Length: 225
Length: 375
Image (cartoon, rainbow over the protein chains, first blue to last red):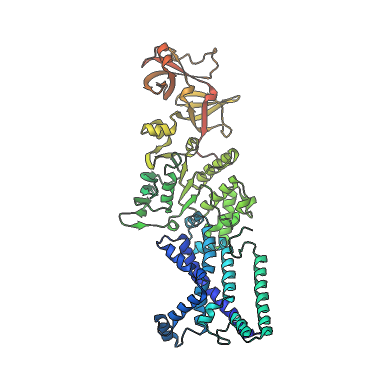
């Protein structure tokens, strides 16, 4: 069993989920409550990874973060390293790839909140940030759990984007799905089977744990418990 | 006065509707200003402008010396900075917080012990102590309304805004909440603005009133002023022009109570929540008044007639209406009666004629107002 690859996958999924919550929450909040125009444009961009083949997304991320692109050059100037074929590069790709899986459950959860609850909080002296943490977050908790579960699971399961952006460096960018692919290519079915089973069991246990703890988290679509 | 509130706003929604007008709320003590008008007239919008939940295109809102809104200078104070209590039409309680947690919501800046004390005080004031640990979804309509009131009052707001506080409650809950609101306002001495489309509520709760019709504040004044001198036929129609006098309960005889109106005395069937003394509004529908011509003062008891009230007066004017004629009398106060054209013809009734206005006791409606004593 490829423990190193499992470690890379879990690390990647964890950090992707953390970053997605930090980025996705304000984005989802703006998409729900914001007054700005052009929201439909942002919505479309956020949803793109759902319809694009991972290779297309991976290709553009590779181009955008390469040493010849402005982003790539900026990152190199700041850190002295290159983004592609590094764990950080993989993280950037994973965040973009799983963005809809974090943002959409959050938007759905925020939309379910009566706007007047926010107004009631304002009249009771709560500023926007306090209102967010004391009213919006507790009421949108199922949405947050769904966003966490889906981002994590989706990142663990990604393959195409990782292959395009991360390559196959053991301990750095070689994730479980790539490791299994490699073993199968090398006809090591036993090793592939072990790792695959480990991944299957892990994913199943996580989902069972989450769904048994919270009946209001939805798997892939909004569901009333 | 110290904290007089001046409100002058103009707000239009792109989809139609809105509000325009001016209104002042006297400061320095408890007063209830009722914003009255039919549904959809713009009453709630006016309230939301005062709270800072709507931003009018043009206007000035001043609380004492504080300017909350001035579109000329671009000044705008957000709702958090206004310290007003807002009781929403359907309560809008926080579903994830208990009754205790809802009431405590606005007290976050207080030390914990003080917070607990304040919440306990509010729960006691609104008779909610037994429900402190319950969640809003398990409460009845009247209980939820009381929680909404307690939550709004807990941070000691400088102005209380109530949007249809008695709407969607059944009759016993209505009476209970109405009594509590009056009691709480008298106790806390917070001026209030109350929105309603119910005339009885205006009379029961209001000191001053503003009439809103079709997106416009059309008349502002004391309840008595507006009722006795409607600014326009539209206002009169909205109020349902009835005879309205301010009276005082002065006695009781069996099932009936005696009410002094001016120097006259009327007998009426008392409503349930009437106390033995105190101010009441006396309402008589003009159609319930019978006129008897030629009776002179002094003959105010006629043992052959069942009606308990006989008021001697003089005809001061006629206003023709569709199918009927409105007759204005002077009985020491103004009284209007509605009679048919045939009746006027037959009686040969003219201006200046002495008449007796006869009203059955059950037709005299009493609406208690002013704060009740604390039990």
